[in-house]
Length: 71
Image 1: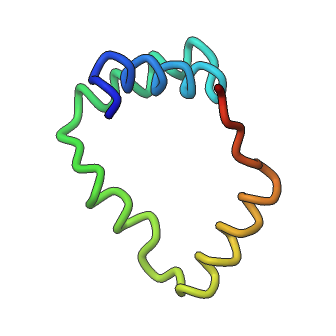
Image 2 (image 1 turned 180 degrees about the horizontal axis):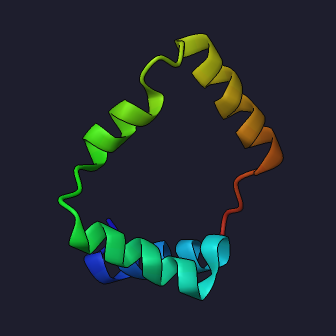
């Protein structure tokens, strides 16, 4: 199992690679500033998306972003 520090480091690395420094800082401050419920956010984000559409998007994403295993 990964410890909290490793999870935080991986998360920050993903954010930095995806958003860059400024938007990563913006994202973190938004999460801290607002009462943030990840489950509710995801529920709202995917509300109205059919399981078929969700699956098609997931399959397309997986094809475009193959899993890289660091060993």
